Length: 201
Image 1: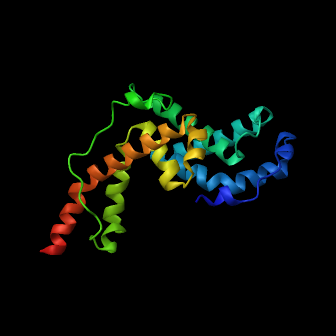
Image 2 (image 1 turned 180 degrees about the vertical axis):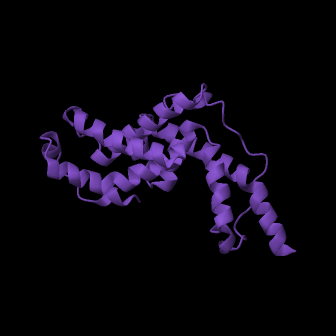
Image 3 (image 1 turned 120 degrees about the horizontal axis):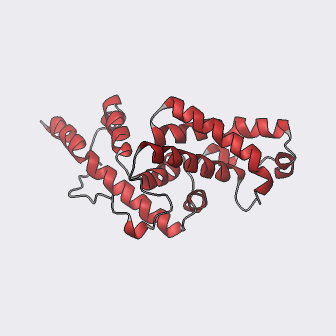
């Protein structure tokens, strides 16, 4: 579970008073998580730094309108995801919108074959080469599914929290996460199949 979810919530009243100490604490508690999410969404450290800065600027400027119906950390994730997707829109013409209906997410790739990774030695799963392939595979996900996967499986948000961040239903989160996991398994099948073949040779 994302560690900042478990931290004591900063006083919303203090944040809405624009209390500098409260905002400094908010930044300290959430910066690493926001930066890591943006970096995985965008793949560029400078862009991630920009998203990090923009997230907290927008939070500071708009905290008066935050009604407290979700955790402040969840709200920050939502700002960061929206800012990241906005930047991705500028990079390419046919973005899969985070608000698109999950029933029509046509960019998904369904698996042709799924291998069983249970017998693969742990050292292969955590090797630098494996991490590189996993990172590349995550980059092939649609923007909507990648955001869902990162929030749930990397940042450790619950389905409910991810749904609030993405402003979609919990069932849509589950479907997107399932599709992302299936695509990742398909993308990595050849890599791990080769590893298994080498181990059994």
